[in-house]
Length: 96
Image 1 (tube, rainbow, N blue to C red):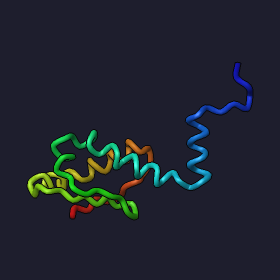
Image 2: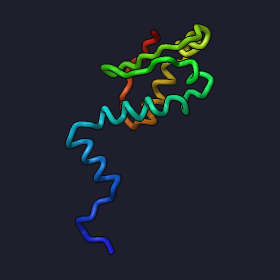
Image 3: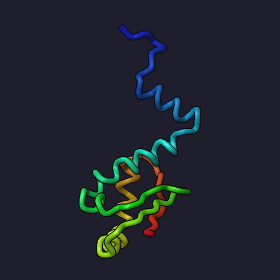
Image 4: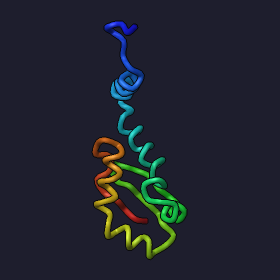
């Protein structure tokens, strides 16, 4: 039986992230972890470096052909990643 002041684990964890101001870093880390699933194995295997700094996603890709394709659809990728995070974590993509 639930008591009136019981909180779900999800709510408690979310509140903890907000109180300790870790939400943004948690969202950034989840985006980096989900990159292979969203982009597929072909692109993930050719991604040599990926990190987020100041709401910019920096990506180093070995293949220039794939890099050019990603440049053309960068807004769609940003939208997918932000939808996964549930907030605006990435504003811009930079290809190295």
